[in-house]
Length: 342
Ligand code: FPP
Ligand code: MG
Image (cartoon, rainbow, N blue to C red; front, side):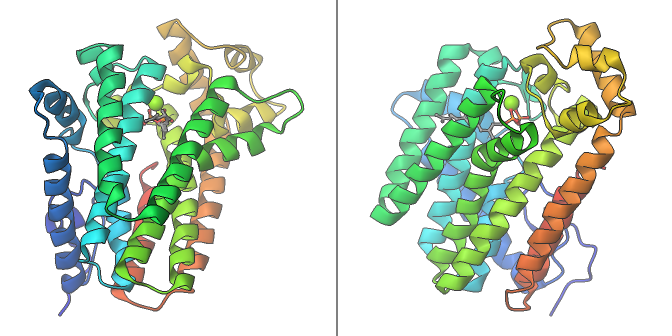
């Protein structure tokens, strides 16, 4: 039995904020059931004797995120037993680690908005936002302990990459380093690493064979890098009512993302844009001016072409997996990463 293609997954899979199509009814039901279990575990895990910690944690848990990472874990788990308890636990762990980094990231970015709502650092203050990230990390660690020492090691390594990716971005590229290579290393570490682990965990804890586990890790890495490239396009190209974030955050942070690097590499780029990209921008008027110039440059177009390359590599890797409805859904997920920037 299969549903007609075109049914939005968001209707089929309550709790996942991503509007993609899962054409196969059995798969849609399995993923929806999994997302429901992940949601319950997320909510149970942030319960504390200290109500305030629960409340500050629920701020982002309930802010209507896309649940992209747990969805990927659940799809990766379709190559074995997708309802295994460890699959659900690992999907929740991945989302909790992700949420923990967002609390910290919004402090570093001095963000005021996240997922269309006030960010935790703005609603409370930096200390509360940092401590809430730490609280989530503590709860996630307790869950990972149930997954065994190898999973703890994997997640520790992933966590290290999240931190070094963020540190590299903060410190910036060195004079002898290639700026595009540096950018790609940063986004693998700060975003690709966790999505790769989300794929590895889903396949591994479903009992899939080692080749499938490795393949889903590689697909996660490619999708993750693509996802961050699309985020960096959105920071320039999308209005806040679509992204739920304030555009131009990277410009304010003085972070040079791929569309900026490509614009700078173009000899015809407006000298005013070069000047604006040479420093962190503090004035709103300058941020808007830089955004306008970037939107008019060829940087976005070239970045979309690079995004397509990552998506195509992910599709090639998908072709090595058995031809199942889950593989089809994963290819729709790849399409989603590209389409969200249009
Ligand atoms: C968002 O990037 C941030 C990340 C993907 C990773 C952040 C990692 C850390 C803060 C490491 C430290 C974390 C802990 C828990 C110790 P972005 O700013 O490009 O995306 P955005 O547009 O969603 O803000
Ligand atoms: Mg940020």
